[in-house]
Structure formats: structure tokens, C-alpha cells
Image 1 (cartoon, helix red, strand yellow):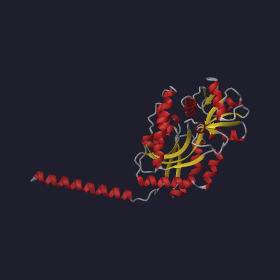
Image 2 (cartoon, helix red, strand yellow):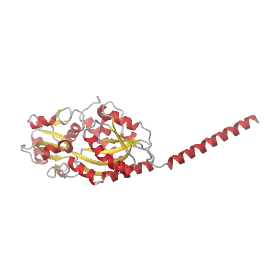
Image 3 (tube, rainbow, N blue to C red):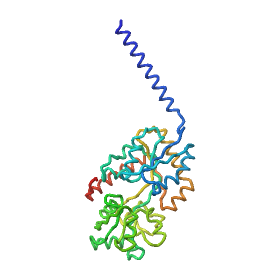
Image 4 (cartoon, helix red, strand yellow):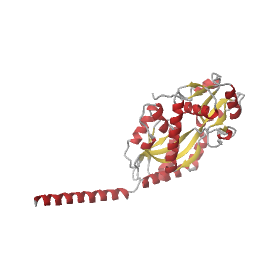
Length: 326
């Protein structure tokens, strides 16, 4: 009898627990989202390109969500500190973050446990293509001319980049592979220090993003001979793509948003729709035009496929370049 009573009491306890859990889940599912401020983590310092883009979007995203969007900068570790903060946050949609190609590259170039699969893709917003830039007075005016010279003079072109193992270094390796040429890679601590070097004639060209060099292109100091983009950029329409020359080389820096893995589908949808509405505002588009950013949106599923493809590409190029995690 006592055993039977214990079994009955245990069964009742389990049933009560299930009912309470179900009720809690139903309440959570029907909770208006968002019902409080949303935190947007930026994995870079204030004042940089990613940060300024987020701040240009912030008021429009807040309006679309009907809540305040609070930006928090978490720089350091090549963006790994901020990415870890995002990945380890509660997956309720209230803590999200901005992403760049670092989300794929870090685990291959640094001893950082950053993996795109730990995140919930929300939306891909836009990009800036990696470009080959030369001095305005350089004799090369097209990508075809530049690559023909590089092929005829292997190991002669001094190609600056933003640092060993950084995106523009790896992109330059990808360009070499696609075109069958060889550069002398000259690393700098960021794109900014490479600018005086190319303007002063210490190097022949640099691989950099259009956004990083847009003011110099507009000012007539640099010219883009080629872009590693899906199509010609409206910001440098004269620059040929590798694709036009029958070469497979697409390397871009991008502006996108994600959250920790596990955000419910309905909340992912709410966030995606809010981001899309914010990105499509005239004010944000005007800002992107002023910075050389191409608006090109992808939804959660398409963005997830893109990240998977990017991961394979960067892994292969890091291996080819012999770049070891530091």
C-alpha cells in the first residue's frame, strides 16, 4: 500500500510539474516581443566602420521594434570578446549583435573558440567589396592590365594589406589563386597605415575595402582597378570584377546581425522584419551611399547558407596561405 501511495504521489508531482512547465511555456510564447529594450553588441571600438553603421541604423531599428535599442561596444581579441558575449547570452532575442567576416575567419587565424554555428542568423544587410587599389598615376587602369603585369612579373608587385592573417591578406591570397599570379605580401597594422605607404610609392597596390578607402577614391588619390565582388560596384563602376575575366574570386566585408543559437523562430522573424524595415529607410540608405556600402539583404535561412559557404572558403585560403592560429 505504502509503495502504491508513493507511486501515486510521484505521478501527481510529475503531472503538476508538467502542467506548470506547459503553462510557463505558453505564457512565454504569447509574451509580446519585444517588451523591453534590446541590446545590440558591437565587437569593435566606437568610431569604427561597423560601429558607425550600427549607430546609423539604431534609431530606425528601435522604431521598427517599438523599443529602445541599446548599443554596447565590446572590442578586443580581434572581435572575439564581443562574439563570445553574444554567443553566451540568453537566447531570448533581447541580446543580439553585429557580425563581419571575422565570424568565420577567427577560428582559423586566432586561438579563439568562435564558430558561426553558435549563432542564430537574423539578417545580412549589406557589403563592401575587397578591391585592388593603386595610386591615381599608376599605369594600370583595369584589372586585366594589372593581372597581366603580375603574371608577366611574378613576385614583383608589392601588395599591402591590413595585417598578416587579416581579411585583406587572405583575400589577396585568394586573388593570387584565382588569377594564377604571385604578389609580395606586405602587412601593416590595419588599412590606415598602408595608405601613406602606397601614396608614398613604398608599395605598388593594396587590397582593402571600398568603405575604408572611399574618401581617397573620391578625392582622386587612389583608383580601384578591380573588385572581388559578385558584380561591379556603383561606387567604382569603372573597376572590373574577377568574374568578368572568368575568375572565381569574391571577397567582401559585410554588415549583418545575429544572436545566440536557440532564439525561437517567431522572435527571429520579428527581429528580421525589424532589421529589414530599418535597412530600407531612406536615411540609412543615404548613409550607406555616403560610405560606399552596398545594400543587399538576405533573410535568416539565406544568411545561414552564406555563412556556411564563407566558412569553407576562408578555411581553404588560410590553409593555402600557411597561416597559423596565433
